[in-house]
Image (cartoon, rainbow, N blue to C red; front, top):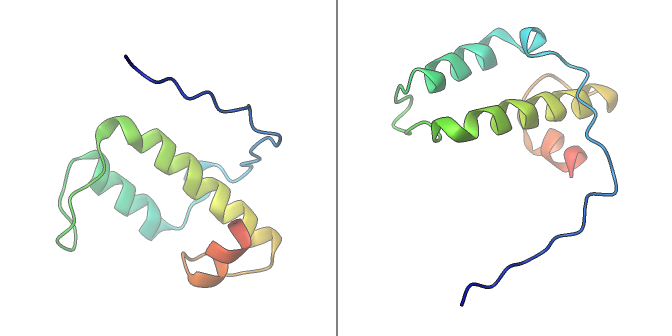
Length: 83
């Protein structure tokens, strides 16, 4: 018998005004490598079905970082502000 877990809908809407083309070049290059299935830095890329989710989350992270006047980087500080 399968157990189904129902999660309530999110009470907030994601706001991702940073378009993908506006991401830092190094981020876009990393996504291009992942989309191509390339191994970078000894790490395998995410499953192809997860790439759209990863891209949306990074766009949201960058939006939040910019709103908090942080640098366009993935860091402890941007991670804390995004939570």
